[in-house]
Image (cartoon, rainbow, N blue to C red; front, side):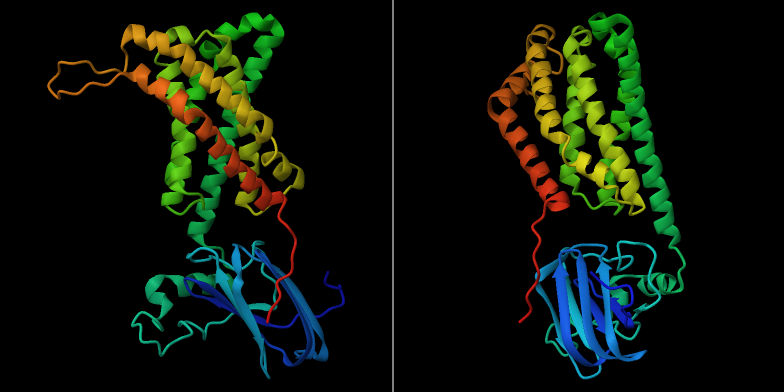
Length: 373
């Protein structure tokens, strides 16, 4: 923990597509202390800085994750240099998670090329401005405290998108709760008729979550978005909207309730993260509530599929029969049976494992200190 009276040295930073470099303006460094973790760096040492021979130090909470195994530092006569390897190859719009930059943290405008300028690889030593058009202007804007217009608009959009989803699912829960308090279990049969239109709007706009990683608005993978959004879309648009007899079943009430509870926690968490706000309880809830709700949701989706199979056997909806001009046959109920038999439990296991590791990374990582040789 950094003492309040401890001075901070001037720190200059720069980046390439793979590394973050830090140059600490401190001469005659003695007894350096370094604690490097995946998203933080703590440093303290006695040395000659802007205020003379004193103890200096700082704590940095980084914007993105770094690879602690391949990161390194060295103490020189006139400064201390860090080379931090990015976990992902990407441009960082700023160094710190907090958008407010301390006055002692500066941009190292002199360091614009890769370190190995004499490499035999013609791509090594290339000016990184060629790789990131507008990089110089963006880093100048950060140095002067000017917000990036594109970054600001992106944040406004993401906040409004998450707010819309939160309001939509809140409406679904409020209407369902009001109807249940009034009519009890008899209200379940009318759940789809009462809130199906809002659920439809929410799920349709969730399709944007597949596009967000493509345009760089979020860090998640496109495949992850397709699996999550696509799975619900098939359940709702094909199996519920595609068969009217399913719409009045009690399972729809419980399924809509589980989906909504999950999203009523997820979207407020995302709203806060847009502006780098971390509320401990909401973070904990976001990465804990899935433990009971995800298995319950999977089981309810399985019930919907199982109940729909005889209906689609009867109506032949979404099936293609021979003969036809394409000479192609497809039996939708058989696809549903195969999913339940061979893919239902693996899919649930995959999703639960993914969320488990997300939870470990967010609220339960092991604490350790990086040892530098």
